[in-house]
Image (cartoon, rainbow, N blue to C red):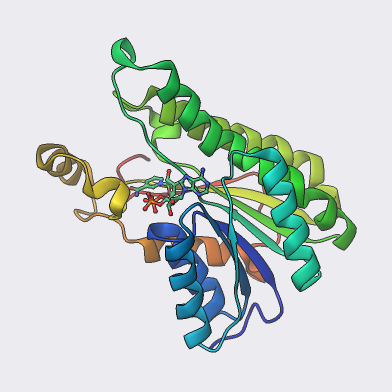
Length: 248
Ligand SMILES: NC(=O)c1ccc[n+]([C@@H]2O[C@H](COP(=O)([O-])OP(=O)(O)OC[C@H]3O[C@@H](n4cnc5c(N)ncnc54)[C@H](O)[C@@H]3O)[C@@H](O)[C@H]2O)c1
């Protein structure tokens, strides 16, 4: 184990599967203590068990990131248990794809509530303890479509563009206290979220990706690990695009 994050406490949302699970395992492997947040309790427990098998520690917090008060209590619980919060990775996200002509109000509201408000909720809750510590790293998981748009994803693209603009604004507000805020914007990563796309759509994506492969959750985790590391201490308000060249 390369313990570059020894004694660091890392909140990771959407940590029960996919990219979030991989980020949590990767941070634990680097010595951090992940506080795992998700709505899927059983899966969260399984991820925590994997982390303990690695000889690391983790805490489990079953919570809906879109609920402001609940998120505040999660951060209080993390502080009560670990005494600090060093990293926040806002990764929980959902899609409710539809062409705008058919998009229901609920589809718009649900995506904005989880992806954008959820990110606000957690940032709002960790900023004060991070300001008191005079240190902290916030990494928000955006998406390539937040920069380039995507037919059928007006709600999702708007939420991710919102995450990017929100992150830049917050980065400006808290940089003087040694806290950085950055985004990782993945392209097509192979997870449950993308497995459900029709084969024809997957094929079209692959043809448009210069590196000719889909991304892996490990590719995203590596960027998150870098942004949390000492080497990234002079980087804030940035978006790391991670998409095989799909968008340049
Ligand atoms: N897979 C991709 O190609 C891709 C591309 C760009 C961006 N992303 C982003 O990466 C992140 C992770 O995506 P993924 O592919 O691993 O998806 P996923 O669906 O496998 O995982 C998302 C996780 O978020 C959790 N979650 C959903 N709503 C929640 C809520 N209200 N409160 C707490 N947890 C909630 C889910 O339970 C799940 O564990 C998302 O923000 C997604 O938008 C994914």
